[in-house]
Length: 349
Image (cartoon, rainbow, N blue to C red; front, side, top):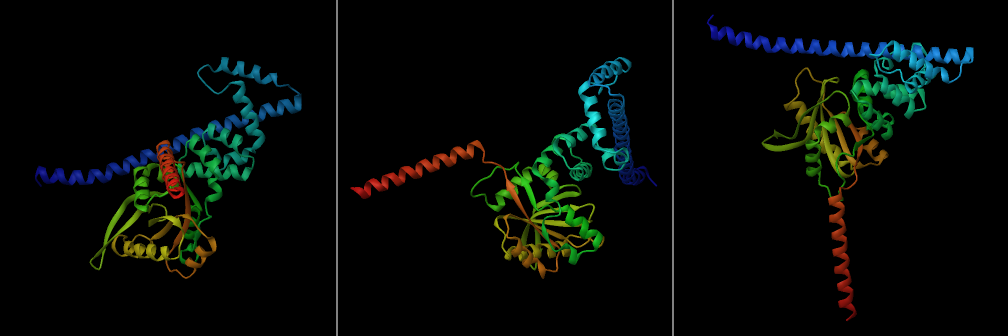
């Protein structure tokens, strides 16, 4: 074997090997981070529980927190988190949860300031657990999690109109149902009165990182306007994703108007094309998501009832118009008013 052949073989083997090493390091880092979060969270719960116990049993007043803060800061000058305010948060944290609840995932995996946000933003224990799980699954920062709470994202999961349960294995259908939302927040895109579908698609591609966050965990972007040849005719798929947990391609079709049954046929055609020309034997059948501006739930259910392909129908909402768009709309309205006024004056003469 010459040096060039040896180099080629080593190079090919190296790429596979280094990817596995990187994956192991990443898993170890995530695991270590979770362990750190878990230890800190349990420590803070224990401290908060001690404060509660002393105040309830011994009748100690609120000033004990201030004294405790000063003593802990003096004893551990290299540590943060011992301010009176944070100690009061620990007390509230211990009052909100039992210790065995904290030990269970996903609560133990969340950073401390995520827990504070859950306490401040949500009253229901069930809602806190739901958003904690979503934060872990999607890797949300604290600010992103708060934003998702404000949007009521947990209520949206599983609320899309789908036919998944009748066409997919129970495990896959349950995961797929929870993957889809009833409504997607595309507030990072400006709203326009006459946004065409190709323009909306391009705006989503330009902001694909934000769109991926909105879609949720497991989505991998494949491409937009994907050209597929069917019988010598070329067709373009709006947006194509791959879901790494479901092991299925997902075709997303965008509609700027209200849902119409005919849209299902077009989406189904694209899904068949992906199944025959793109997916491998290892992949499950392609899933379709129809994103429309609005929908009639009964019409959507009727449209999906006899379909033999797994499809979900969801809606989306856009952000407010930009300042530039508002100014353009205002100039257009003023121009139309002037024209209308001129026509009335001519008619009077």
